[in-house]
Length: 429
Image 1 (cartoon, rainbow, N blue to C red):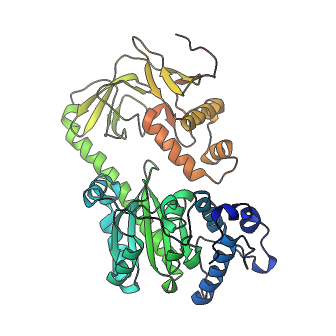
Image 2 (spheres, rainbow, N blue to C red):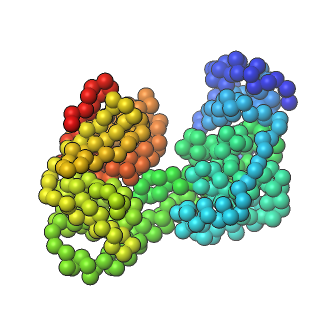
Image 3 (cartoon, helix red, strand yellow):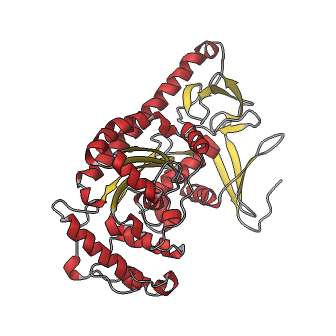
């Protein structure tokens, strides 16, 4: 392995990683698998080692690394990581891991993941790992022999496996790319990880689109089988379908527990859970979600106006404070973005991130036609390759402002009138 420093290498990186691919190694990449059926794993590992060594030495490799690998190596070097010396792994204390497990929605489906993966893991000498959205390993199960080898890498419960911590690895790279990733042998940045393969896929909440974590299968590199990627995909689909069913069951329990009260309440109303998902509605057009309720503030619901949430069992009763069909709002960009709803006696105000403000500006310009995830991706990032990121951002936006934005397509809800106050323009009182 060359001892060339990251600083010396960076000047050569563009031509090495991103130059033209030699004609003799053109490939048709049809999935995120690191190998094709019939690949000689030993030979392939040796080629990848030469690629890794050449690239980090600033030389032209025998073949260009896959795009996902090249991008990740670039990020690792930009962070100043050293491939020859693993960074320190300092796992969280057990109590902190237990707290994250309790708070993670993935605790609802980890048993199903075990059923799909762990029995195969024992037979096939690999590990099943589940992380949260921060890349912290919350659960790790599988072959005792492989667990022991993983311990020497710091690949254990409580460890953070992001690219910033351990370089190119399937978990951290899946988080960075917002997509499934499989890595084989020397595609990992750190030399200590070269004896491994890893296959990881993000899990999103099927209702909100929120990133919940990553499912990963890892094992000795020379035991990688092409079916592993399909196995991980199946596990993710199962987990997301079970999360959807948990969501539906929770809303049904809320409806049943509140039935007595709902029978005695008249007028337009919504019954929602703690995340703003609608379990029951009366006297208002169908909607799926409103702003997350809080007892100490009014919330805005198109069709109901400003509402005062009332705690009702495990959920919230949402009723209008006053009858008003339209919601008039100002997006103030004269400083840090702020959304103000015009109301009496006090305006409703919430801070916005710059990205969420950008989304609202785009939706206001789009009008009734709205925008698809692909259109938002193009408007924000310049291409259609960031649809997953866009969906997650809009999900977070809707969690903050609820029904002011609707989906399919994304647009301002009926009854919402939004004005944008650009920088250096005073806000009307």
